[in-house]
Structures are given as C-alpha cells and as structure tokens.
Length: 104
Image 1: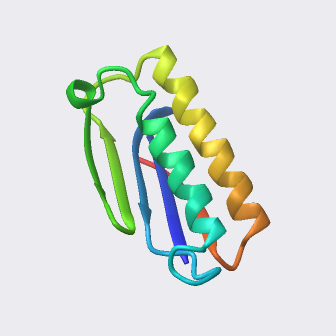
Image 2: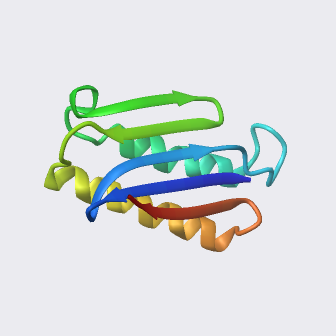
C-alpha cells in the first residue's frame, strides 16, 4: 500500500511524504504506482525554486518534501493540485493507497 501524508502547520503546507508500493499489479505494470509517481514527480517539477525553498528526497518507493519557508501562491496551487489528484487515487483504490492529513 502507498501511504501519503500531508502535514499542515497553522493552515499552511509543511510537508508531504509518500511511501510504499501499491501492489495493484506486477512490478513495472502497476497502474496505481504509475499514477502516483506521475502526479508526484510532475508536481515537484513545477515547484518554483525547489532546491532553495524545500528539502526533498526522491528514491524508489519514497518521496518526501518539506517546506523550508512560507510557500508561494504558485506553489500552493501546485501542492493543492497534487493533494487533490492523490486524494482521487486513494478514493478510487482504497486497498492500494491511503491519504492522511495531519495538523501541527
């Protein structure tokens, strides 16, 4: 199962963590994993000044993103889009993906 966690602090994006594998199909043919990967990587590529404003790690089966400063309006839209898309995947495939929101 893919576990997705969005953390907010005072109503603002603080961090995102995605870990695990969906287990919805054979390795390399898992459509849920492919969808989540596409959403995450496409979104991360659209963040402004990613290396300056965020601490991030991307490896097989794991992605983390932590805001180092207040998120710009542009990036809020990108992060909200990522969250809504992942929410849709988790809703459609509850045995393969789970999205959780936490507040600090």
